[in-house]
Image 1 (cartoon, rainbow, N blue to C red):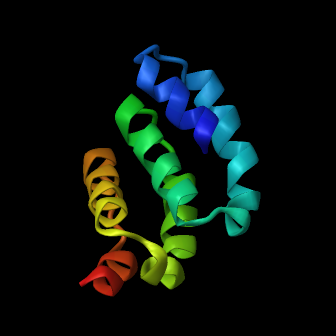
Image 2: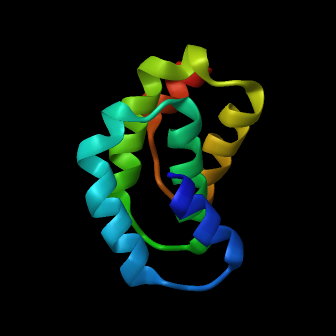
Length: 96
């Protein structure tokens, strides 16, 4: 998550790198803490790389952890999903 976030901050487009990150991250998302989930969603939304499977997996992992998210994390997660154009009704129902 940190590597994806850091690379996204550079503004360099590297869809192949982000595809590889998504493929590696999806089976490991259960190991991510709330900040890691936020950073991953933010990085992909910020770069514009389409990764619907990753966002679905993040939504599934984030929903039961919402109590661990701070207000900035909730806001960044909402922003990331909206920016990526990904609907996650279960996640947003839990946020509400």
